[in-house]
Length: 296
Figure: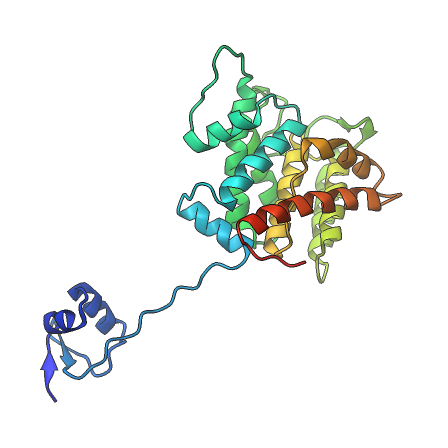
């Protein structure tokens, strides 16, 4: 049998010598043999077909690809800005949508003749990191450790984190209320959180309603001193992405409906469900624009 060198095959096929060596090492050229440190290739060998890279199909896969490539102007970019702005705004952040976008796009501050709360800026940057953490770990089981890490990311570097009594990344030390409603006592939180997560993970097939119900239970416990709403909405993002359920963003005009739905979930689930479905329809419009498929 007549053999050719790597250099000869590279010239014949119009590719680099390195690519030919890789083909040989991967056993993709039939009959190629390594003699010492030199590859000998059958003269009549056919060039291997290029492997087709699997295109990302689910929203989670697309978000991971765009995050990895640092792509601007896509759905990853849109999610970061819209969710961060709206989720922080619900909790009292005074940063505008444009300011939030500017911080994400440039990693700099651009405020003129205006006093800005440092915590608003820190929590905005931290929230971007939280979304990345959700995207990176979306398919992993929901755990207390994951939830505590989200809280730690969100609150690190804020004025709260410098208070001796404020537990960053840990459950609350003092009782708190939400919307005038009593929540779990600090000594009850660990047991209630373990039970909630265990029952949720034991569900055979988790639906959108199950995700909303977990959110209600989580907010009712109010396990952290502050930041429960944002952590809770990040958890919902994670659970939607992991199951290829269209996620949703509670915008300012839906805030009061969202609060009403949480407060009355036990008596009437339709209110919060309808609010979520409205927000989900808006996110579907983003997906339609970027031509990303989703399950109806």
